[in-house]
Structures are given as C-alpha cells and as structure tokens.
Amino acid sequence: MLTRQEKEKLVTDLYNQGMSIREISKKARMSFRDIGVIRRKASGEKGENQDKEQSLLSPSSQAYRLFSKGKTLLEVAISLNLSESETSRYYEEYLNLKQMDDLQTIYDEIGSDITHFLKLYKLSKDAHMKPDHVVNLLQMSNEYLPLIEHKYRKLRKEIDSLETDKQKLRDLGIQVGVLTKVLEKYKKEIKNLQKEKIRLESLVNNGPYEKVRQIAWQQPVS
Image 1 (cartoon, rainbow, N blue to C red):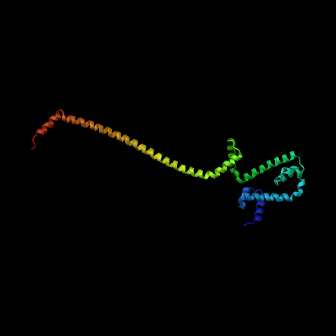
Image 2 (cartoon, rainbow, N blue to C red):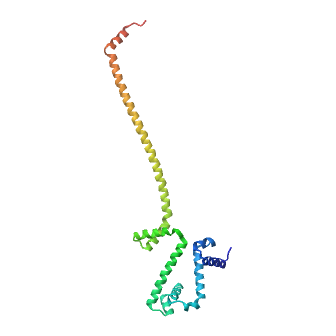
Image 3 (tube, rainbow, N blue to C red):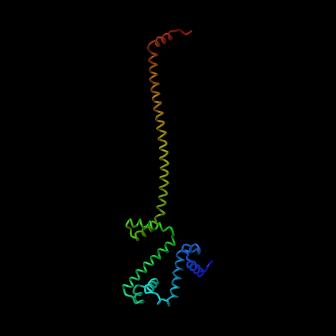
C-alpha cells in the first residue's frame, strides 16, 4: 500500500505525463477530490519555489497568481501597485480563465456524460430557471426520488394487474357474446318446436285423425 508521499508523487508524475483526472483516478485508484487536492498542493509548492521569478512575470500573470492564492482585489492592487480599473480587469480575466479550468476539470471527471449536463442546462434555460432553482430541485429530487421511484414501480405493477384483468374481462365478454348467440338460437328452436307441437296436436284432435282415434278406442281388446 502506497504512503501519502508516494501517492502524491504518483499523481504528480501521471499528471505531468498528460493523463486526465479520470485516467489518473483509475491508475492510482483515488477519488477525483483527492487528486484535485494533490494537484492544488503541487501547484502551490511550485508557485512558492518560483516566487523569486515573480518579478519577471507580466502584471496580469502576477495578479492571476495572487488571486489564485486567495488574495483580495485590494491586496492585489496594493501588492502590484495597480489601479482600480486594472485590478478589476485582471480579476475578471482571472475568473474567466478559472471557469474554463473548472470546465476542463468537470469534463475530465464526467467525460462523455457532459451531454446530460448540457441537456439539463438547455431545459433549465428554456424554463427560465435560475441556477439556484436547479440546485434546489436536484436536492429535492435526490431526497424524494427513491420514494417516487418506489411509488412508480408499485403503480406500474397495479397498472399491469389491471391490464391483465381487463384482458380477462374482454375474453369473458367474448365468451358471453358467443353463449348469448347460442342461447338465442336455442330459444328460436324451442319456439319452432312449440309451434310444431301445437300444429300436431291440432291435427290429431281434428279431421281424419280424430276419427281414426275414435275407431281405435272403440275396438275391443283381444
């Protein structure tokens, strides 16, 4: 297991070789945060060793260095003997450069996943949402999302169950329809049979069949 000094040296060497934070993280098995701390520390130590050469830097570069060390605008103006407008301009330039560096750091960390962040930015912009609103929304989502997902899965199961019941009812309805047609057919057949029965009874009780029946009743049994 590497010591703290060995880890710092490994991270510094890998960074100097041109590796990204993501690559260094996989190689050294360290978090992005720890790598960032080591990078900032290495940059600070390098800066202290170069303090003697600071006088050779341009005023803007000297101002950027002081801002990176957390110096205020007033302290930078006094240290470099700058006017208010010069100090403000250098500070604005420093912020622009720092934001670009932050963007590069973010890209190194998330890689191709940055497309999701760009999509989120576009959606929030279209909705006229401020950054703090987006942050608050994400925090709320992170807190309640597991509960919402649980409810969604439960509702999904209930919907699937209802769909199954619906299909069963649909099948049952088809069966009822078929049986209803069969029943109607039987009713018609029964009605026809009843008509035929009445016709036959009328035929037997009237006309020649009645005479035959009477003759048959009059014949003695042998």
